[in-house]
Length: 105
Image 1 (cartoon, rainbow, N blue to C red):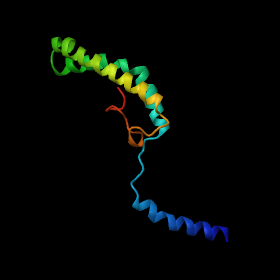
Image 2 (image 1 turned 120 degrees about the horizontal axis):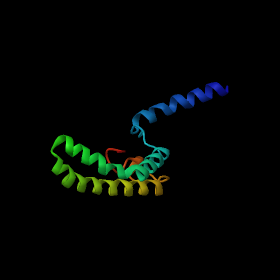
Image 3 (image 1 turned 135 degrees about the horizontal axis):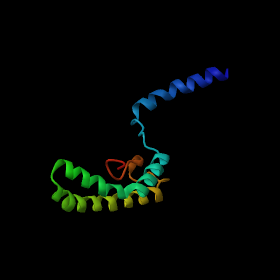
């Protein structure tokens, strides 16, 4: 008896699931992990950006524009990490989506 009632409940609820929006693969735990990671390693954006500019452009641009952009990104990523750690229990932004893309350095 219990099994048949349980099966009917599952069958009745499945169309509701299909009509709703698909769930996001982001969770509060992933937001906390992402925030901790970015808070601790956010400073790596500076050397990564300098290296990227050195490979794509030249050394002068790497140590001027690349360094300035990298320091700015490092500050922003570290701040985003602190924000995500502080707000990980709340779905802000919507559905626990990342504040910055790419999600990590």
